Image (cartoon, rainbow, N blue to C red; front, side, top):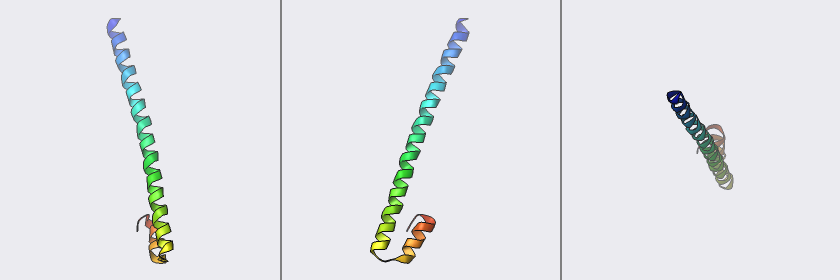
Length: 65
């Protein structure tokens, strides 16, 4: 019985660790998405200020100038 309990405890620890890792990765993904959106918005604003329609179109298509 002791071996089964140890195996179950180990399984619960690994599951908890995996859930925490997945949660952290989801949070990191959200942060990276927000940063990418901010970068695109900033580039679009700069292209509009510079009256550079070619750059604006490229930014909207590709996400990069």
